[in-house]
Length: 361
Image (cartoon, rainbow, N blue to C red; front, side, top):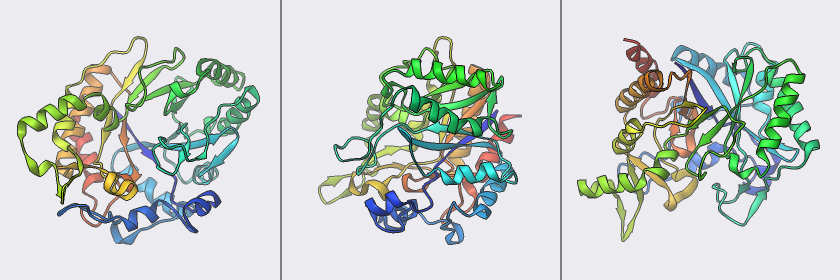
């Protein structure tokens, strides 16, 4: 089983973020200013040894790669942002391409949502609109990605570069677009593209006939599709500690164990598609959402190790999956990261290594 961790590149400043959010803005800006909403909430999240890194520094990327390799992470899936020819946050991955010493397999996830001031794509105040252009834009986009696809480190299935799409149904003519890209890949000596749909709770159904696989992106997939069952279980428990209060306001919380148990109970079949399971470390997006945050209760490194171990076994036995995708390597502002922090040290990344080892017994 090859574990791939989603990777956020927003840890260096760019002119667009400087304009919208203030000079020098990075993901650390939100992370640092977060404050706890209730007692015993771990906020702000603080990296181990105050390692507020800059991803334009190759020494940081080399440190991340060694940490990942030494603890069982097979590769990174970098979020990629393309807005009808305009790119943002592309430099870290471009630097990876130029530095062969950063020797960890990688792939791309096209995060094809508009950028808005609410971070979640649900506001009318759009900062960067997501449009899909015509064949000229499709060709420009493909030619940009091709240099990554051809790299020896790029993750492939049967000589098809893995390309993850965050929200396929947002692309009105996605099958035509993907057929165009697949043909271009073949023209450039590849067998095609191995396109993977992200099941994140936002889509209504799997919609593409040209994709070859789906990812259960957690915890988002389970939150959206299993929420009635989770709420029913929470009500049955009648545990008010699961709903921290501040005055008359009840914060939106989810139970870590119940959510993971729903994940592990799911059996899923999608015709003619490979299925890749997902895992998540924790979740607390207070740094981004403030009082509108969603906070999970009950996460510990020991629980994460146990649940990840079960998910690895399920991937092997039920789906014969080659990959499992973890959310995430470094989503600090969403509270789901494997990198070491001041509270837990290296416990979560150590849990990955332990889960892999135990799952092989």
